[in-house]
Length: 149
Image 1: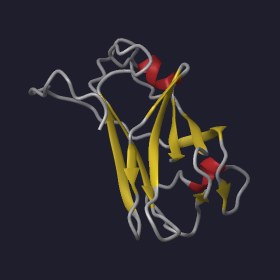
Image 2: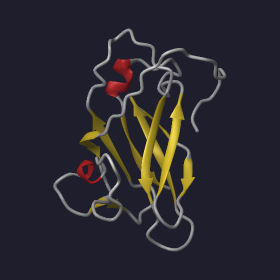
Image 3: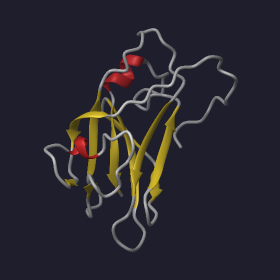
C-alpha cells in the first residue's frame, strides 16, 4: 500500500471513477497479439490468458496513458488505486511493482505473484512526485503500469 498517513475519517458523499489504459507510454513486455500493449490490459473483465503482456526479464516495465477523468479542476481527490490482474508463468517466486509515474517519479512496492490469476492493488493518498494532494490535472498527467522485479 502507498502512503496511508493522515488516518481515515468519514469523507461524506464521494465519487469513484474507473479508468482503463488508452495508449502505451513506455512498454517492454511482449504482448500476445494486437498492435499495442495497452490493448492486452484494457478489459472491463479480465480475460486471463486470452490477451496478455509478459516478461521474464527483471526490470522491464509497461506504463500506459489514460484518458482524462473529466471532473472539475477544483475537485478534491482523496486517493487513487492502481490495480492489475496478474499471474506468474514459471515456478519459483516472482514479484512485480505496480507503477505510478508522475513527472520523473516512479513509485510502487513489490508484490509477490501467486499461481493462478489474482488482483494486485496499491493505494496512494498523495501524489508521489511532490507528496501533495492529488489533483484532477495531476492524475490526468500521470501514467500507470507494472514492472517485473
